[in-house]
Image (tube, rainbow, N blue to C red):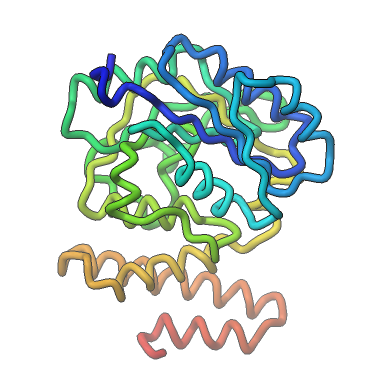
Length: 277
């Protein structure tokens, strides 16, 4: 177990109009065999039956309510109000195996210098289990370069020392999607992200209300890489790799804009790809 002075894990579950699946997430957090935890659900202005559902848990959980500001703001409020030294994020459409927290707690006990780790996942799409593609294979350790092309860290799978947010900042509230990609790049350029190679997180997708379904993710990944390059925290080698991926994503996004008749936007991203701003 984590030593007594830092043994509390704060579980943060952001939700917006997810009453239909939220109960499974909350129940999986309550079912954890790790006893020293608090469960914080942040209701991001839901208008369905979320409040009634959460009221039924009484003092088993803490409920924070805010006007609808997005998942980043909801997670950030939970982090701000948390009491634990460790943060475990759980999306409202995902769930955990009962030993997820205890396995990660044991990992941090065995590796006290670690700041963040994640577990492997079971993927469910449209009600059926699917196998992740090879490109989605999670690396362990210094994962910055492979993480530039696509997000290789899942919010529901991570556990993070709270002090890491103090060092790297929290989720970017200007990003409606890819806010996790943005944070993991800020973290992973100089911090190992370790993998517990056991599937303890059940990641569910395919439903119509997923945020990624309504936004172009590459647009926000481009902005995230640009912000990171301009922050001057990367080594020369990291900056060159990031710049190469940045240009590639700009070209791909620009071509997509052109095909959809958005010539002005496409021309702008082609200009970025050429190294002009």
